[in-house]
Image 1 (cartoon, rainbow, N blue to C red):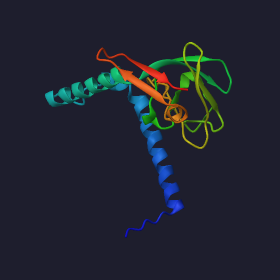
Image 2 (cartoon, rainbow, N blue to C red; image 1 turned 90 degrees about the vertical axis):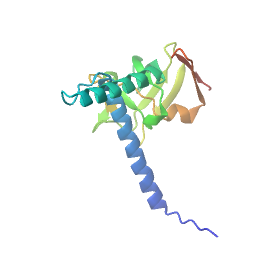
Image 3 (tube, rainbow, N blue to C red; image 1 turned 135 degrees about the horizontal axis):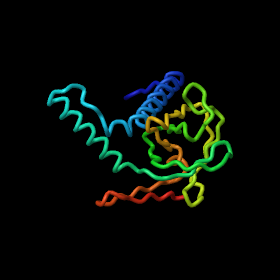
Image 4 (cartoon, rainbow, N blue to C red; image 1 turned 45 degrees about the horizontal axis):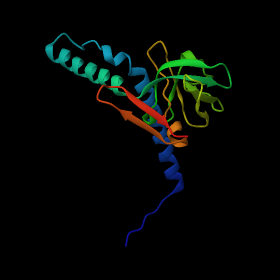
Length: 175
């Protein structure tokens, strides 16, 4: 017979740490997306050049296959703002917002209580979320940081991604 002992405080601490890791990875993903496709070799030798080529190609391949879209974003019921190169990506957990969208920030994160509404370029509301205690990162638009939806839209409605051999795909929000 097996027994499992679950301590709520340990589980809560683990969830908090996991969320922090997800936010860190999401911020690194967004900040590194553009710069990693044009890396400079660490040294002038053949091995450094080969490794740089491999990493640059991997980054280019990822950017080509990632579910990227142009979205309209409204922050705190303000004006709609267009953000190109947006990622529809649950891997970023709480997502990221580029500085170009001027979100209210506290310590590099979107301020708790901020309402973010995301629309298609045709004006269809995809989802609305209010930033809570989770840490939605703010990424530098100057460094190539893009809008990343994070997991929020995946929690609200089913989303279907369809890829084709030509490299372009289709995304369906089933609301």
